[in-house]
Length: 446
Ligand code: PEP
Ligand code: MN
Image 1 (cartoon, rainbow, N blue to C red):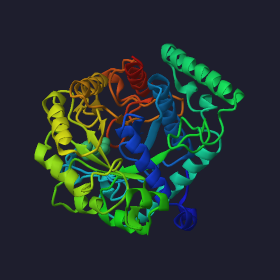
Image 2: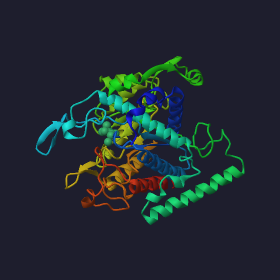
Image 3: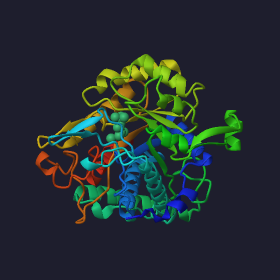
Image 4: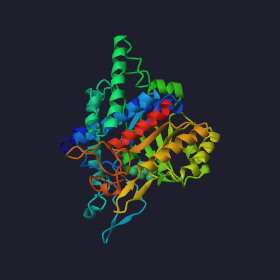
């Protein structure tokens, strides 16, 4: 496990968000808006200090890269990758208290605030410093992976293939990798892999085969977020093109932040904070969002209707999406606000299994996702991406977690307890995630 001994070093050097990279993400999200790229937002529901290990970080990145490769292959479109990583330590809760056995205790609010252990539920502000340390440690590890060749499209076999147990999935993935290797070889042979012709990065920089990766977390704890927010110069080309002021407030703790479904009140402190930062932001949109509320929210956080600034992350639930999405799309269209629409098929589909475990059924996840694709098409709109909670984590014997039901591995209720490792929301495991990647890839291919 990474220790806190290097905290001082981490403090000095590690912030993910430089204005340059944050602006680059805004630009790429503008491409998603215009149907020129696809967005993959994914990772754990919440990270934990204990799970901050090199092995876990590379499994997460490996899964995100594998997923995006499958999408790129099917949709023939660049994929913008944003991880729920390097700072996703705070959880919104619907209730201040929870019942554990016969005890009534304060709810667990994420490692940022208190401990999962029921005797460690008193909020402790020192935890924010630890969160900062673990975020920077994760980031340093991430940077190492992204620059070491691990993340290069030239070596996709490094990411994950060993973990895929289903022979059919393995075969499908191998076919893509073989095809990709051929294409990259060909591109190299004809000399087209020189800087400036990147298909992958989208913004015209980098070399074919390199990947971009961005970090994100829910902007929940405003004290923490403001401490990482700085007024900094807007890169000159952006300031000139978009006629911005010469400086702006950047949250340097992540490239992308989102407002949760429980903290998006129009007159609330979260909306006020988000209004003031230049980072691209996400807004969770659930069944309780009223049409006029959505437009007022967009007016507040994006008054100049700038491209790439707002991503709407819809999370209604499979049984409610038909009731709400079309209305929201029509309202936003009428308002003239440019947005990226992405589907979070996880948060509206949480259920409790007979043995008391919080779970999600793969069929409901697919059902919300396919309804979302269909409704966007019917409304002459476009689904720009997905937001998923998944994990490539394996146990010591190399088996995936068992937190969501179904998928090609047909996980049953009585198998949930086998390797249930999440201390927050249930995540799709490696195989279930690839199932979704192939489903989407095939959708976009057709
Ligand atoms: C989450 O993304 O983990 C989350 C809590 O989502 P929501 O705010 O949509 O419930
Ligand atoms: Mn969650």
